[in-house]
Length: 125
Image (cartoon, rainbow, N blue to C red; front, top):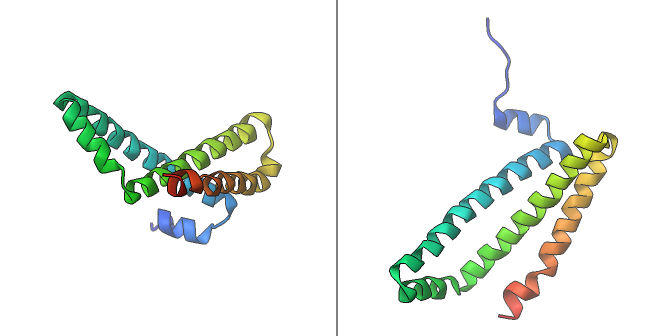
């Protein structure tokens, strides 16, 4: 007997709404933060090679590419944090009827934070 179970990509494309967007962005930002944490621990481990090794690693990170990467980390942290708070409010306070509006508020506030940080990451260095 065959089942008509959709795979993840089909489900996402056929059931596309704010809740699905929230679900996907939460997972992607979480994975990005885990990868950042691994890279961060690798960078800090260069101190074991001495101060010259650590200074060389930090000098390599002082480039426009890594400033952009830091900015993306801020975007992931901002969205992941605010969306996590939204999920807690929806689950614990029973505000599920406001879930869609809260998602767009979270998206907007995270966008304001990320766009407001542009001078700190790109213009004032």
